[in-house]
Amino acid sequence: VDREIFPSVIDYLALGHLHVPQNLSGSDHQRYSGSPIPMGYGEVKQQKQVLLVDFQGRQPTVTPVAVPCFQELERISGSLEMILSRLQYLREQDSSAWLEIEYTGQEIIGNLREQIIDLAAGSRLEIRRIKNRRVAERVLSRNFADEMLDDLEVSDVFERCLDSHQVTEIERNELRRLFQEIVQNHEEADPHAG
Image (cartoon, rainbow, N blue to C red; front, side, top):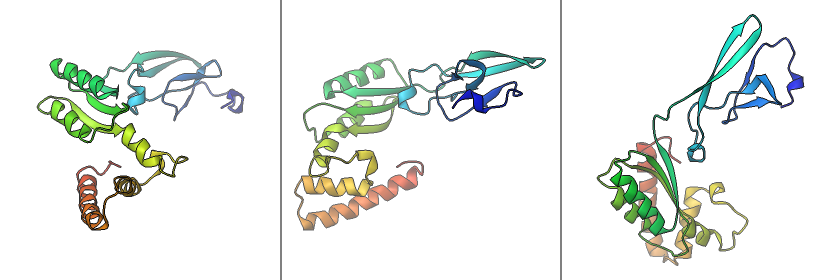
């Protein structure tokens, strides 16, 4: 946004939507305030802040105030060995982090989710999401190279997995029924999931 679109009579202008606080075109009294908490795992390394604006007459004084991290978030990405090693370390540190885990290794590991969940079991760690890039790439690579996983419905991805693994029609019907039951249970347990 060009700061010239705002009238000069505004003593202080706080804009929203951008997650990182920043001045508007170098102006100290026109700025994006930023979000006071991480809005996703991509923001875990950012120091969050709020801005204290004090007015002496019409001249604002802006003081950033750091917001402490109330819930540790961590994104773990890499091979299975790297993921399990980091999980073990966090366990030993008695961490209560919320984790997003992304497997980027080359091997297809059928029980990836189970290995991760088993290692975290009994700890204070909370696994919020597990992404398996290898499976996603394999499913999408079959005639759908221009599509992104985030653009697909969960049922489409499931159907492509069935195709990828050449599941028979008899098995598909039962797997579809079970899949729908799991999705429904997940949505009922966490209405914000999806």
